[in-house]
Image (tube, rainbow, N blue to C red; front, side, top):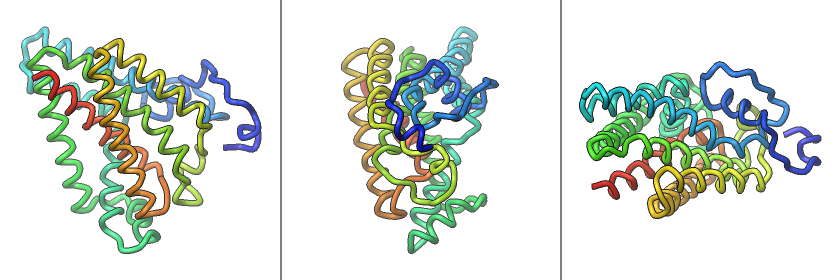
Length: 256
C-alpha cells in the first residue's frame, strides 16, 4: 500500500470491482491498480462473477441431461479456467512449502519454486476429490448453482481478513505489492458476502457455511504465521480454496 493509500480514508470505488476481477480472474477487463489494497472489499463480487459463469455451464449441462458427475466436472473446469488455477497453484505451493521445509526461509523458497512436490500433488488431488464429490451431491439434489455462488462469495471474503491480520512473510512478491488492506475494507467484504449468500442460499446455510469458512481461515492463518511468519500470495490462494471446500461440504451436508 502506498503512503497515499495509508493516509486516505477508506472509500469504496466502482472501479475497484474491475481491479479485483483483474487480480482474481482471467476475464478481459480494463483495470486500475493504484489502490489494490482498498479494492479487496469487492473480492466477493469477483467470486460471484466466477460462480455465475460456472453456474451457467452447470445449468446447460443439467438441461442436456449430462448427469451430476459431468455437471460437477464441467463446473470445476470452468472455474479453474476463469481463475487461471491461481488458487489451486497457491494450495499446491503452500502444501509443499509448509510441510517440505524445516525453517521459514526454506519453506518460502520451496513455495516460490515452480516445481510441484508430493505434498502439493496430494493436496490438489484431495481438494479436487472433495470438490467433485460435493458438487456431484449438490447437482443431484438440484442446488449446485446457488451452492457454487455461495461458496465462491463466502470463501473470497476470508482473504481480506487474512491480508489485514497477517503481515507479509516476504519483503517482495504479490502480497507485498498489494499491501495490507484497511480493516473497514475487510469488514465491508464480509458484509457483502453475507448479504449475497443470504440471498442465494438462505440464512441458515449462510451462517453455517460462513462459520466454517471463518474457522478454517483463521486456522490456515495461524499455521502460516507459525510456519513462515505471515502470509503470501500462495497462502491467500490456499485459504480461499480450503474455505471454498468447507462451504461446499456444509451446503452438501444440508442438502442431503
